Length: 331
Image (tube, rainbow, N blue to C red; front, side, top):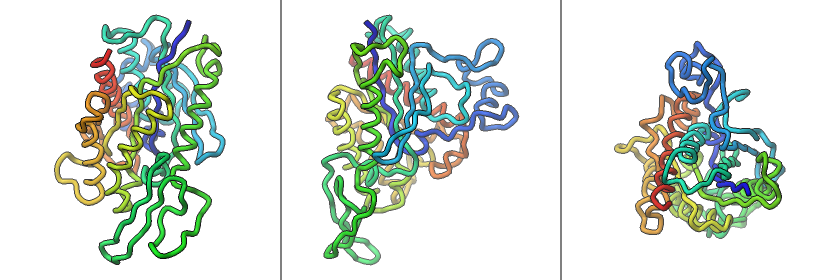
């Protein structure tokens, strides 16, 4: 009986994928990296054509705004053919595929496949759009104006309002993107035969891990940036609860422009939060953060790293290796 190990990919536009594929004569594209720099040879066959990277790693990507219906963008064995832009999923899938096929530390049998299930959209913050269920509201005093703001808890609207005034709800609530992204993932998992060849209604699956590359939108609000660690901790716990997978591993990556030393303001708050969760006792051995600046080939998160495909490939492979390390340490 076929079994499936599921890895769920969440975030905003850089997880969505902005790495340019076409343009063999243009530095920064995936074609140029492969053909001119001879990088990522696992993506092509002997004739230089895109090939299936691993026929045991299924790549599914569904995208929708809020709780609305989503659009299926990808549903095939891991490959680049026909793709205009990539996210980190190609690098992630390559590393997980190696682990599946070659590593003695992988407990997977010959009948077990991997499903990369990406559900995300751009321009979403953890402190508002992706706020997980159960997140409480909080108050924050603006250092310049001294006004005290109420920041929305889960399902409150709008995102903030001045304390002492009445909120004026908008057509969006705190956590609306979280609810939609998770619902769309569950819809896929409830209908595996549609997405995985050979799967049946009795096919068993295990949510083995989560990947998260996000943080850009949270940079633009001091209160949300300072609250990022609290939200991230809750986010990890809630994901594991929502998929009844308490032992699922969690890998995130920092924003590519933020240095290990010298970050200031909101960027520093988010960076410290991202790097800090993995050393907390409750996340020891089950959570890892990739310091992504060494893998960033210019640009920044708000400019999608200039669309450089090597950034998305290299960050993806680093995240994949981090996940394999977590999986291998526990068997």
